[in-house]
Length: 345
Image (cartoon, one colour):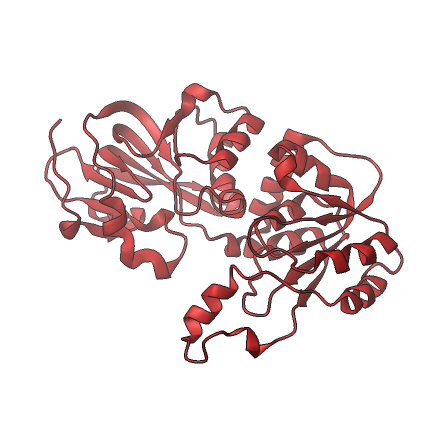
């Protein structure tokens, strides 16, 4: 089927807006118990890229770009340009499909907090069709292995699919999970069912590698040893092993990052201590804290303006650089924090 996609003519809109424009071609599909609403769109060409773009196959060349899978308002301005990135030849014909490839889907937190809850919810409805998944996402592949999604149901973003029945997932930012406890509880239970649990209890330091690591870790480890912590390196374990490892954690301590996703598997009422640098603080896991009643403590590195190498550096650039900067912890601060946080445990 020949077609042309001009991103300059594209119309970014939400699926419910398309429903209002073409009620004969689209309808909502509500899962009220989880506060989620999918949209079913009939007969369209779905362009697989880092956003969901489609052309109505029922006539007309007007392209739409679905904003539902762009989790953050600030990113919407780039939707047409992003969707223009994938126009390979050939069209794959599908009876039905559900696209799950929003930005950041290669990241553990973004995938588990923003895509996986919707995928699990759709699966629970009895949907047994294919999913269009992000390319080169190890965490997505491992997750689908965990929950038993057969390889033949996994398609790759980057192609063009003519879909008779496209199930569009709703917009979901991981930050909004803190306001949706039924969905958060469903996500946790689904993961627990997939990985099982460990008996007893432990205190664990979840080590980060790459960027935003603890720069003076040699000063931190002796303090943690005094309180009986063991060290876990996620990169040395499969995703299933990482999730299962956390199920008997009485206390976890870690630098801020995607690994904090694992706190959703901790014991209810346990302790979670998150270490931040002084230029990048983002509370991504409040859904786990609220659901499990975690005793949460954020330890932020002391502010040191000398770390700004250029006094004329714009504030935005300074903060963005901080997202990659390593963290220096105060061992005495951590010791006092642990004395308080672990009292009675």
